[in-house]
Image (cartoon, rainbow, N blue to C red; front, top):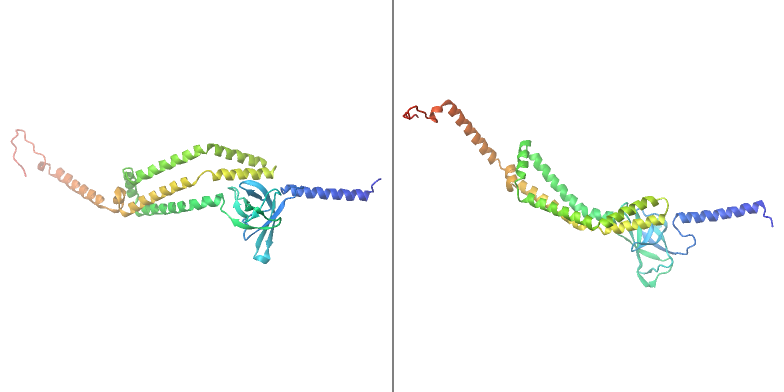
Length: 319
């Protein structure tokens, strides 16, 4: 049977529509012929979460964000629809946590499946939670150290502004001879340096793996969205294992020692503190110089008072 032109056009339009639909779902990372489960979660703030962002269980991708809807009738809360693999069992008490999945601030959902012996139905709503990501944890640890360093620098500025250039030159000259606070600070710096060096050596393979993952990410940015998400997850796990806490604690100790040094200097303790706050050394040196100058003038004008000379050894005593 010969098809008419109108029927051919209609069939072509239907096929094109199906291909377009499948292509859009594929570009979003959604399996075209899968029958995944759908779950919902409500957030007051999604902090930049977008559709197609991944959903992880212990770092393994099990789904993605399918849709985000603004609920204006509920104080502008946001309803997030998740598409989860059909073989994943989500049980009673399951929660989803909104986290930063990498150092770039990309967002993802971490799924806690709850009690799998009591599975939830497809379409149920899960409890929401927000956790700190990598960037937030580093900022929280570095903020106290930054505040102490700022206080230390402010004290140094006060000391520098309190004297003239000559006085500061004398302070820098005496600094080398201070064997208490300065020596302790140098020892702490050396300890911190060895600790950082050891940490880098212990994690050399992990750092190499991280750099390799970054290179793969740059190559796959436009090719494979699924592969990119897996690489970012590995990067997140590697950064979590670097153990930044010991280094942060040592930097905190260094900042505290510097703060102690400036406090003692300001209170007049130690050689440097006495030079800054006590002018007795300068006064004594000035008086000594004046006495010496008077003695030299008198010696020049009345040399006979200090030098006795006789050709025959029988000179008279002179006043």
